[in-house]
Image (cartoon, rainbow, N blue to C red; front, side, top):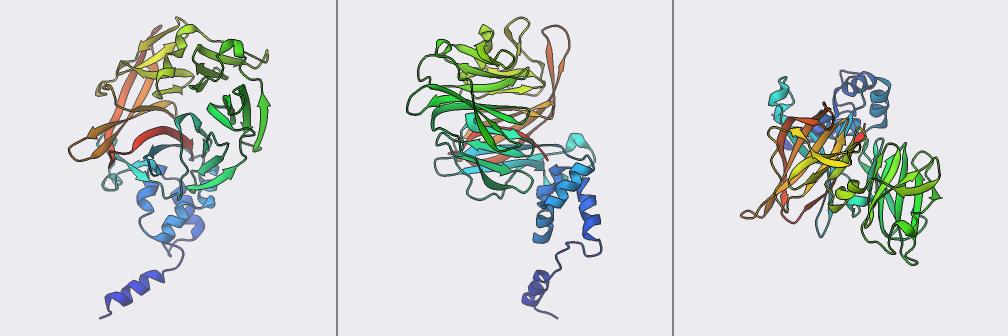
Length: 365
């Protein structure tokens, strides 16, 4: 009988194809038809299988076969490091056919040396997540292969800023670190080039405002500042004031745009902004979604036309933090009436209590 050491050597000498009975092209074509929710679990089969799941050929096949889908990523930070996670099915549930019994978890992304991140500097474009920092450095997480690469730096150093995306262009509004003047720039993700844009006039904001939050609605970058919300009118080439009550989302990082509607969490409830009546209105339905207590970090994310809500719960007795996640289908019914149906809720991750949620984003892979 062969020894365990010899068996181990045989395993290491397996051919590069994780299933030698299938040609590489056929295997790639089969895996391309599976949801990305299965990939983190399948990557545990072997190193060669993991390499296949991160290969450019696989994602080219997914694109050609129209199998691309939204994939959720979550950034957590502590005082010492940044961590990224992606949503997947629990290994025990991969074979289940009953969707109602399916359970989800967050799987740690194996990307190394993740740079620090802030909510206002994280945006997604296609299959990439851009991490813009006040030092002007820009890093990009390629979510197909889960590796970081450098992108062109911001032309000027910023003291504070906020970014949003429209039509694969990243709009950045901020304050120049030295002059304290308002600046606006646009990074074209397709060409990798920065262009200066019309800055927010000082008549609409005070000098050196420290807090900015951005979102694109109706194809216009909206920036929440200390004096309300301003939006950029590209047809007239100028910034103008938005409706007065819209700026309520500025008070926290618990906001997101879904299907051109702005949502936020206020007073523990999920609300949406109705521009026709210039008011924030509670989302109806939401059976099973808890009311969020003060101090709970909540993040919202557009997840392929649905909404993902991520929140935390500290467990002081164990020194750990539970991360919870829910997926919500949204439907506008009557005038000024939005309904949400909770499709699933799960405890998806447990981390040391020193970590906090930075942002949830969805990419197309």
